Image 1 (cartoon, helix red, strand yellow):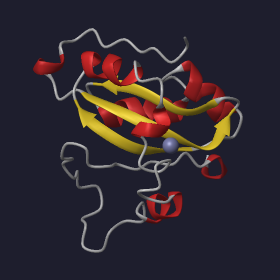
Image 2: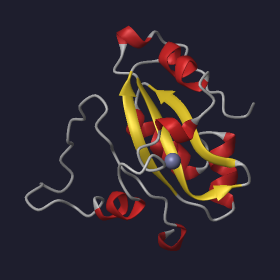
Image 3: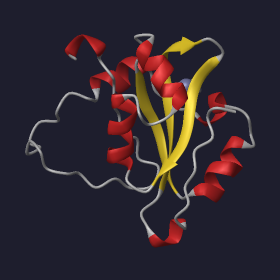
Image 4: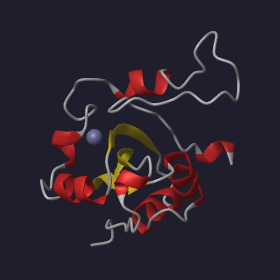
Length: 137
Ligand SMILES: [Zn+2]
């Protein structure tokens, strides 16, 4: 499988997170990417740059975009457990109809009152959204 990522550092030692990317345009049979990272924003930047994972690189190269549908606090063990369900759809609030893609994309507008550049701490399970926009690059 090309979607396996390695997280060699024990989750307890870091703020490791498991995250689910939902592809705006399905790529072949792939609609999601599940991974984990001890520095999520850094890993998302890697995905954006095409160095995060093979799957996100091919999606990116095909002009596709994605959003972070969901994150969990946890590491490789949680990632394995979630992957063993073999269903990104059931994990994904967008696919489950709990939130629409439009809402996710709308939520990326900077909220009123937030200081630009200020880091906002993420709670467990709190969605964090990112969209790769090839037109802006
Ligand atoms: Zn989804």
